Image 1 (cartoon, rainbow, N blue to C red):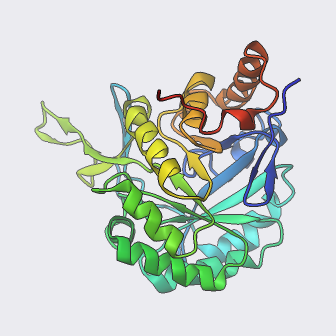
Image 2: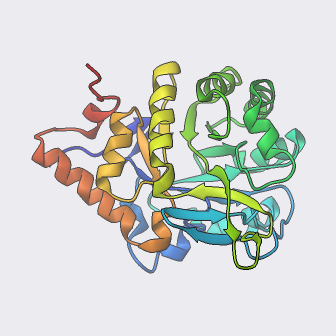
Length: 304
């Protein structure tokens, strides 16, 4: 059988399939459906310094090829995560990564310091790109200088694998990638949601309470693929790709574009088993093409 394992920043993933923050809860919600140990990793929902209630309802809406959301990083804060969530998920037989967010550099640093103390968490995903937060996230993720600044500040206190999640709502994704690498990022995850909106024509009102929100799902896949390929070609750190991955073929396309691993997001809302189906589909692809290791596919796009 082919080897599905990949190595990212010294961590061995049993396969390249992970789940995207905000779409998989803390992982335990899906534990009733399947063995979480079959996944390469789980990126749990965002953790901030203090409790956040999130945005007012309605904050999610279906689109013809995906969904809009403006949940607003709802969570009970880092103290709750450390005391109540971590003990329940620490022994999952897969890598657990925490999505870290904040409205100020100080808040990012505070959360990263607390997560750094957790032995069974090998890395964090620094969320500087969420388009649903009124202060902090959008600014940090769209200006190279501030992206470098917040990454560097977290790097000083966080001693394990530091991944930075990039926003697609920028002029140059490669400049943002270089900026966070300059700040000390070990790896890059991309893309977060594209900024979009929906309107109820009959009521003549916005569909979301926040008017705008993050667009995810199949509609953004071509943009995500392009940006994954561009970042892979521009920096020397591993890339984890996401954006509209619905099946194994989608995942393989991201790997060919340069992703060492992928995250499954919106598809989890449609089919709780989709991540396992993607693992099996990647294995079947390797067998069919007589490829001994998935690592042979990384960046294997033939452009001429």
